Image (cartoon, rainbow, N blue to C red; front, side):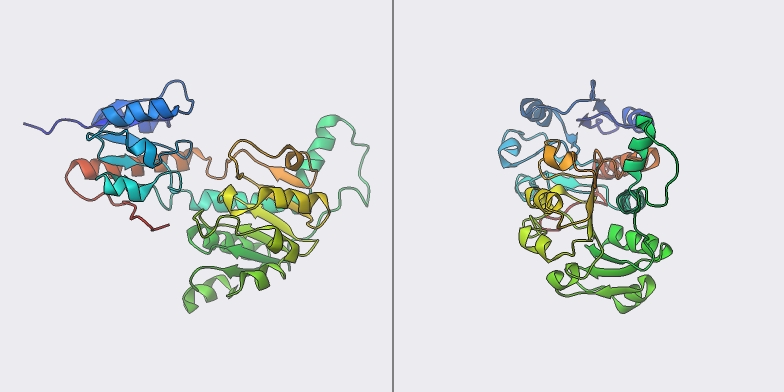
Length: 328
């Protein structure tokens, strides 16, 4: 007899192609409407599921895992980041955690360059002029931005996404610098024409643009704090497409309002959707709703990775994207 199909609970709506394939392979509960589950909903889902497919909007901490019961065996996260999941506690309870690494690399790197261009060339301000109907025609001094070529780009976190940003940056004539937990191999540095800085403080004091591409861990919480923001040049720009918690958002807001920074491009925020209104209102800040990885191709690829992880687990093997506690 064939093995019984796994019960899979998905916490958010996914692309139709992904949901259709899941229905073919598993006994799947899909989310409708597409709203975040409450903690009670998540606890209930974890009690009746063999596999939970959460997203970044689901905080799965030790207290919630304690309510899971014995049926749950796999948390197949839809996304690469797992800082919303207590991986160590899950492992202690015999629950494997997997993720979807590598899928959003190119899409997120595209968004980094889009934000750099948007801030340095004042694109949203130009768009607002056109949409308000107040444009009176071309002027030599109107909406003057800055040229990218020749500027120094500091990349904080030179993993997959950081290196993808570096490849794009070179095409725009930017000088690539980086700070990372570990220095890259010489041949990778040479490929990206990248300069390594062991000291983050020394790097950011000399950069024209800082791109944050590191994960959120206890070690990176408020890595860009008030002290480090004061080290940056008043003409510098900060771009964050990684995790909002890496930046002290209140300190960033104060620096921007005081003219101590030239601008910021943000796709992630320290308190999720609770964005500081003073930050949102600044004309030199471009705020996006966490859409760095929002391409249909990327979302489908993420779903395909989730399915492979679940199917491999169902076949009695280690999921290819299993997360090891302390990995991030």
